[in-house]
Image (cartoon, rainbow, N blue to C red; front, top):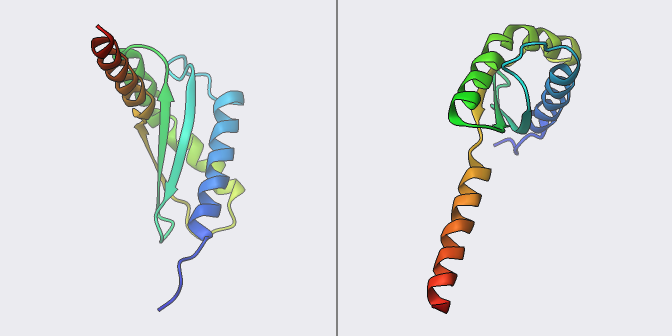
Length: 119
């Protein structure tokens, strides 16, 4: 059996760089304001790329940013195609990364538990 390939990781890093550059230079959609790419995961067959993003603001702002990214996915995929040397270009799927929100909530709970223990 063949060992795990590093190719998906390399493609993921290339996609991250291309998409981040395009978001800062080329995307003019106001919905895609302060978006931070947190991770890119590419399937083993290089057909799909899951791009996780963090967005500052309320839930409505986050959903609008995600909608803007999905709207720009064709443009971004074209940019990725020009940068990659692969035969196929992964479909780009955007999703919100709620890791920071969860970490903040855990910190709040821990702080309240510590405060209760001190009282």
